[in-house]
Image (spheres, rainbow over the protein chains, first blue to last red):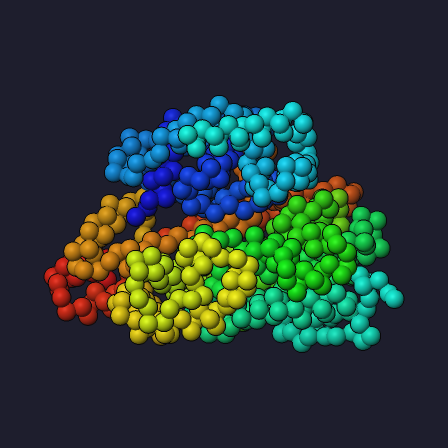
Length: 168
Length: 433
């Protein structure tokens, strides 16, 4: 019961909070693509992979009091951040163990920018294609973000490192 | 010999349609695609899944809807866009094909089937377009790269965003057809809006189709129709009850197969999905007729849970439901889970929380909120304005998500069970029924 909710609270707890809805969306997507058992269904929206189910569950977890949402006015936009509450820690007390590698994966993602994770997640969305085609797709989908070749290389290296650390 | 892409039928063909009156086909390619086995398969998949168990008229199929989306896009292109400088008429055929084929990968009772077997119908649409199929053979007659172009439009990765927006945006042909069609077949009075007006005021622009300012009220009506259809039809709690049971049937069959249970009716069509070895042929071979045949046969299985769930689905003995607030009642859920086990009723199959949520309209907020292309109004001076900035009605519901949670359970089993009556009574009193 509510196991999928518990997994999200565990994730945010291991990350010691996550700043940015977009960043959270991309982190969960990347973790899912690394075969961690998140069930949220993602679709390619106009600007990249996005899960309505994840948005809904996070909202529910806030309503339940297991997550606290903080909203900060950044002038041209509002930034949301999430942390686990005391009740949330109780809630995940009996939840299933998570693999150690998830912590490592989260740590690596958290230190990266939302823009970079957006690139990584979009590349992963097209990971059934050859590298050149993946890059071409990103340029089409995210034509306004103007990712450079260096950023593309860095994103592929990041995906390689992440996969390697999880296989260890 | 005439280029296949431009080839027209010697005489226009029409399909009678209760929503659009007629669906007009002149292009040979479109006619040939409709005749393929993969497209014909859509006749055997309900457009609204289990909704026919609530609204008995909702027997229409994804075949009907796909033709409807094609017809709307054809009218937008031929009647509203053609000849305007922002529209590139060389995109006409790829757009029509994408409209016709956008739902090709839907499986039987798609939502439940995808959930249990972790599948994605959009991925199967791509596979059917690009794989060894009759659809692919027709598309390749246009050109070698044409199947890929159609797949890119449906996959939202086609370079011409205007083309993508006709099939997939907050005001697209897909929604305009399903709202009207689903309203017609369910018999509800919601879902109707002035599509003729919207089509007349739709204009091409660089990134998406936009609506002339004078059409704003028709768009407001469309958004409100969508809002009402979601809550009155798509999220109807009784049809969700049927879907809950459907999911549990598939889960039970999978568990039994993994445990080595000997089925009287072997789940031949499901085997490759249970062990994740399925291929495109396995997927295309499935439709709702086949699933229903299994469900009917499984009523006579030895396994009581599978037999009971199939009986419930086939004979419409659905689960009862109550409103459930996860924030306030999640402890109650744990308590019920334990009591169900004590009473000998497996809560994994008979106690289910189901949530529905909808966001009727949203606009893009830079930096944060994901990621919908807003509806833009074309003002008299040529400026584009986001809809909710002009419309008070749309502004009032923009970005506002509505959510509903229900807790489903077999009330009849709890009332009529002969064993552990006290426990069952205790459960019923917690459930307040």
